[in-house]
Image 1 (spheres, helix red, strand yellow):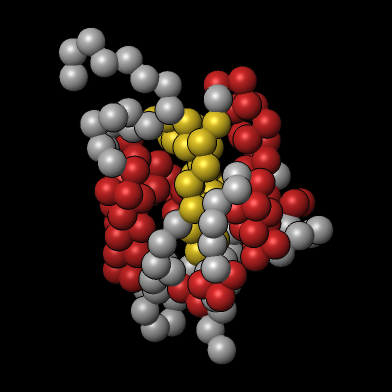
Image 2 (cartoon, helix red, strand yellow):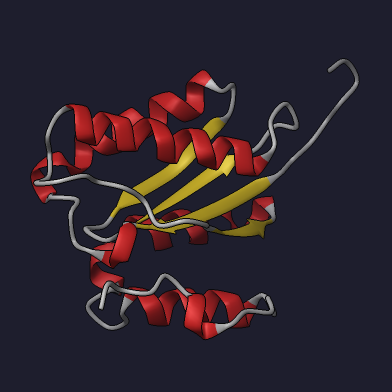
Length: 153
């Protein structure tokens, strides 16, 4: 798109179906690289990524050539297929429906990158659900807590 100039930074957060801890430490780096490839192939810039056992954080520099929901759909579908084709889990892997997306200014990037990088340490103090609800409240996003990445009963 000629003469289109943007600066859009979005942190996307999504969970494993039922918030099960299915992303193993042994597969984490490969999965992160695979997701990075999906983002890059879509012409977008991946700035930071961290896969926890039950959820993932991705920080992207989003260009207006693709809708955010389409990009997230490609990341989730591609990574799901990769995990299932390589039989990383017993049964069928899938991501939970939906995602959270939070925007940042350029001046906030270092803090967000550090936050994503330090997920393991961060989750020693706060659960994923607590973290996610904090994001929704901080950004004043209306939500119904009954539908926030519910675990399997």
